[in-house]
Length: 398
Image 1 (tube, rainbow, N blue to C red):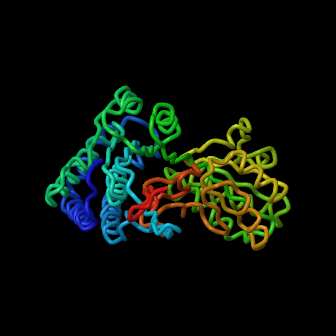
Image 2: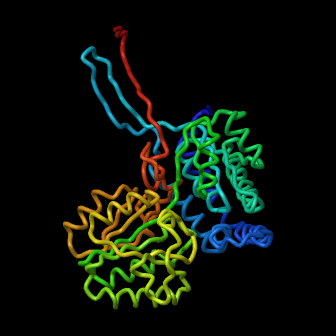
Image 3: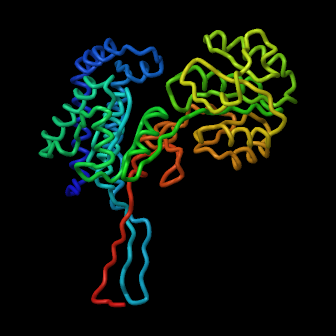
């Protein structure tokens, strides 16, 4: 394990990284254009995540600048206790050591996730996808420059230029100590890492998020939330895939027709259960299995449901454990829904698109975990730590 860098040094590296990202902005975007031109896939969400423009560079700069302003997450006292024998006992946060981040297509992860792990006192290993290689290598060069200019070894941020076979071999028998792995990507990547890893893995799981329109919903709020959650960023894991509508909703027919019309404006493909497929623009779902799918596309499934309890059961059966929202004016119904939905984030009258470290007050995130250990939902700076016991005595024996 590397000797922990003091927080002043970590902050100085982060601020230098922010300055370099700004001064090298044009070069980053130009190099990213080469990755975009070489991308031969037709996955629009992958392309969206791969692309770096001025706005994404601004976000990268904001991320590392904000990290530099945050309190040190390492060495925070969580518990103190004086033993009967006079020993003073403390529990404090501690860095993991070395964090491996495996991800697909997103060059911004090379800045934001690496920045969070670095501020938390960890050595960083990065393994990005081949589609973003040029962009990632450019950004890692900037990390190395920021480290060197602050008298810090470039070993703190290392890029693993491995193919799939080499990655599997490294996961099964790492050639250096790895304390934690964070996969960022689709279900196949996550399954691959879980199958082969020999150390703890934080699962940044799939979305497949639901909105339930309760019979006492404000229909304008329901419309705004569904359109926002579905159409603003289809590549996001917090995007909406499924809508459940209470079959006792007043003016249901009018609401459904308006919703279909609005979704069609955004060229969203609409599928529905038996009750919804009577509308010309709605195709019948091929099977119940589709309720489990995350689309990452302009595609949505809408169905009718009998009650809040049925909605809860349906969501807990099919969702990815990420985010769900209830639209209702009835606070008791909302409370029941939120208490019983087994998701990392539950909403009342708001879009699922807010399941995001920055939006939820964390100043950025390493991942959004759908696991329950050790942290659920967005994993921010304060969560990327383990803990350690410190016991001070003067000769006590047991």
